[in-house]
Amino acid sequence: MRLREILLTLLVLMFIISMSEETCTSRLHITAVEGEPFYLKYCSSSAKHENKTTTMKWYKNQLHGPVELSSSSSPRIILLGYVLEFWPVELNDSGSYSFRMGNDTYDWKLNVIRRSKHSCFTEKQVISKVVEVKKSLQIACEHSYYQKLANRTLLYKNCGKIENNQNPFLRKNAEFKDQGYYTCMFLLHHNGKLFNVTKTFNITIVGDKSNIIPALLGPKLTPVKVELGKDVQLNCSALLNEKDVIYWNIWKENGKDPNVHEEEVMKIRTSEGKWLASKTLRIENVNKKNLNFLYNCTAASKGGIDTKSFILLKKEDMVDIPGHIFTRGMIVAVLISVVVVCLVTVGFIYRVDLVLFYRHFMGRDETLADGKTYDAFVSYLKECQPENGEEHTFAVETLPRVLEKHFGYKLCIFERDVMPGGAVVDEIHSLIEKSRRLIIVLSKSYMSNEVRYELESGLHEALVERKIKIILIEFTPVGDFTFLPQSLKLLKSHRVLKWKADKSLSYNSRFWKNLLYLMPAKAVKPCKDEAEVLPVLSQS
Ligand SMILES: *[C@@H]1O[C@H](CO)[C@@H](O)[C@H](O)[C@H]1NC(C)=O
Ligand SMILES: *[C@@H]1O[C@H](CO)[C@@H](O)[C@H](O)[C@H]1NC(C)=O
Ligand SMILES: *[C@@H]1O[C@H](CO)[C@@H](O)[C@H](O)[C@H]1NC(C)=O
Ligand SMILES: *[C@@H]1O[C@H](CO)[C@@H](O)[C@H](O)[C@H]1NC(C)=O
Ligand SMILES: *[C@@H]1O[C@H](CO)[C@@H](O)[C@H](O)[C@H]1NC(C)=O
Ligand SMILES: *[C@@H]1O[C@H](CO)[C@@H](O)[C@H](O)[C@H]1NC(C)=O
View 1: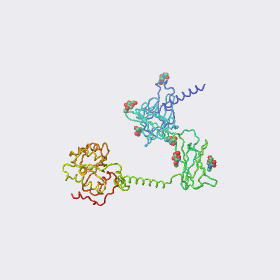
View 2: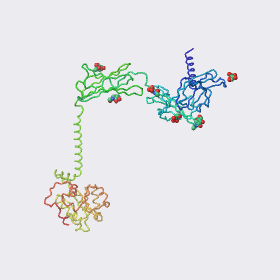
View 3: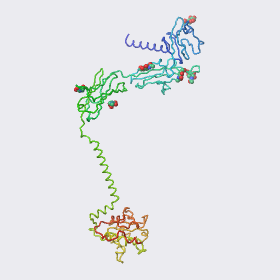
View 4: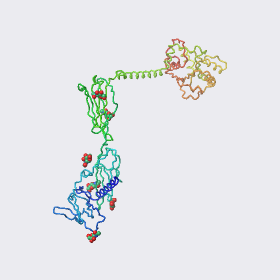
């Protein structure tokens, strides 16, 4: 016979054997679990051709001889020709059974064992299977006899239900965590009672059986920078087979250094079933003797060895900035930034004083070369009640007293300085041209005055053409500035000074400082004989 034919024959034979094994009970010694449905079936080689009328008999062999079984001997027993069914089998069903048909006899020894109280399966009834990791793991809940009777089939792993109950069938690539007990449970209804038949597999996952050559991880030579007096740990890791070893060679001619200690090996199983082992060498209080010595780590198996070396080198001292210097540097940098921020803030708050101080200190004078006559032209409400209005007093007396007498400026006040007669508007125009600043004293009545309109044209020209700087003094609170000419509204708010009769009297008050700040720098020394508080308004 050719090889192919032999194989085919073998396959067919195996098929027949497995078929008959599953459906009929060929084993002599049988174990069953109490409480589960159970059957015995005679293996008839030519069952189909048998004479249907041939009598088939079942016996249970008692001490005093065989006793024929019939449906009346027990309500749990059913005789179905070649098959004897138990619904269910109980402990006292243990014993020897015989089937007789004509001259044929067949005997079985049945051992009914106790059901496990704490588990969904009975340990003596498990089918062991070994599966290699990464290979296919299959668990099919099949039962040649009861499957077709089962209403439902459930699959459990270690007695926990696997949520796949419609078709309890597991097929996957095996991982180590798949190891465990898989129980198929077939639920059957019989005579209105619910029974279950279990079939349990003990699945063991084993690693790939092929051996690898051990391999140490990392470069062949690892230099490690150390500081004398510090501790250091050298970590040696390797990929190994289960039985391989990993160790350090730390012995010198005169024995090993007392400060060198080998730690226990640590092993983790990889998903391929190999081992990732690591062994640490701990060197305490590194000294000169530990330097420049090759600490070798070796992994060894039957197939070969692998070695790698570590060498301790002294860390150069000045490579890094020492910690305390770095910390100090940080603190200094932070302090400097804080100081700078404070200076800028203070400078902003006291900028007026600083500018005035600077002007005073440097003797700056911007009025010398511009060919203008006046430092400021003062515009205010004049006509209505000329002599007793507060604005009038302020503009004609207080302003000149402070700015001219005390600080040495030259003001142009229309009413005081201009001869009567002549075209007012032209006059104003030319006076503004001759002035370095335009001081406008604003009050509620300013807007209602017709002079304003005359002024406005000149003002506008001055603003647009000459770019004269304007200083607004809010004499009484005005609130809204909508009545002002368009160009005036564009003034920055710090060019609007608020006069407060009670607070602004002293020459050192913020009002006068701000006004001086807006006035041109001038080097003229004022005469110092004035009182510190202005007499004019303090009387009123
Ligand atoms: C079947 O058995 C009956 C009696 O048990 C016998 O009369 C008959 O001849 C048998 N037939 C065959 C085909 O063996
Ligand atoms: C299941 O298999 C494991 C591994 O082969 C074995 O140690 C254990 O004893 C088995 N359990 C039973 C109940 O046979
Ligand atoms: C279970 O299946 C049997 C037939 O196999 C049927 O007679 C019975 O009604 C079913 N019971 C339930 C609860 O489905
Ligand atoms: C299976 O049957 C046994 C005995 O009849 C019973 O104790 C157990 O609770 C049943 N298990 C399930 C899941 O029905
Ligand atoms: C040593 O190295 C291996 C691999 O890099 C790592 O898994 C292990 O945790 C390390 N051991 C120690 C003690 O650092
Ligand atoms: C370590 O290995 C190197 C080369 O691999 C070898 O020259 C040296 O002697 C070894 N040292 C020890 C202590 O085994």
